[in-house]
Image 1 (tube, rainbow, N blue to C red):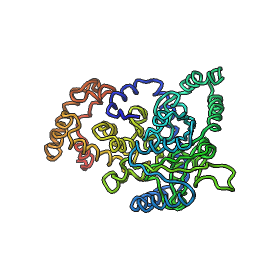
Image 2: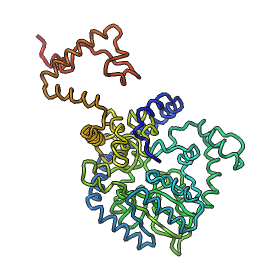
Image 3: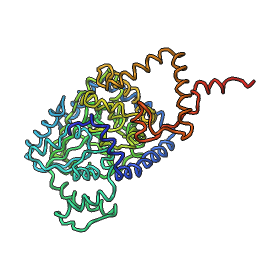
Length: 474
């Protein structure tokens, strides 16, 4: 999927006007937040787990080369094979090559954001293979020919009526001629369609939530069981994962799994947590004949030790998206690439370029909710500010905005002058807006007043009010 992150403003405007999207976002917003809060509150040691999780990731990143090499050694010892890819194109070419060597025709896929990042579906289809997504949300958006709008709930932007229309239009040729409108019957119809896909697949592709260096195992978490059918039924299982997914031991994974499910879906643990360790052994009842792991860098090694290093702790739970007021208003497609929300606003400029995606770090209120709920304590607002500084220094932001910042900086460096000018502006705006109590239009604030009114100030600055409250009564 080619990035169109530079079009965030226009996409966000359309999203705000899309009544179906707003209906879907409203329905799911509180669901994620409330379930996470309840599950976290029920676990007294959650903060201690967060700290331990951070330590595990930081230790691993400090010795990433060692743990990746050890992981490869263990995969090889178990009969599998590791492939190294520095770019998305290299990763896709390796996956296509494996499929061709297996003389594959049909490929099933589990939900995987890294596979979206490397655009592997496009590469496989160009090579003549039939590819079907098996996660229900991914299957829905594949039918709709859309990218995911959320990293854990790809079709969160779709309403039940949208799904009913998609299934009715695409499944009639498969013999499902009656329109279904209830969620259980829609799910059952998808299950019947996908069953044949599972049974006929030559290659199954999954992502990995974690890679375990100690055992050479890969780990996926799902709530549908489609991941298990994708990695056990086909002759070839391909795991595609980014290099920072590796952790040292099984014990470390158990800690991170306790954080992941609670932060993502508000569950104590997902319905299916699957460990894959090499191809089928002689005593195994099922499993693939071949086991491949494609490790993708795509700029991650450059992040090690720089100002964006902490982003490599991300475990892709989606909590920052669920709690972000901007994402909650415009959804994921407005961000224009694979990763939306606060985490995407940090990652996308690093992967596609700040010139292409410079609007994303500015698509944030910097309210800090994302950092508060992140299970890995990633300081997302700080990382977004790093991008803003780089954008300013490279003169990629509009000249008008840069001049406004220079003007603000001039006053901010002179506190006394700043307070006097601020007090004067507050009093002027208070007098101009006292009748209506708000402004529908303001010079230099058209982006704000285009969608909401600006409340008229009460007539004094915060500092003035604070000093009054602090002063003893006469």
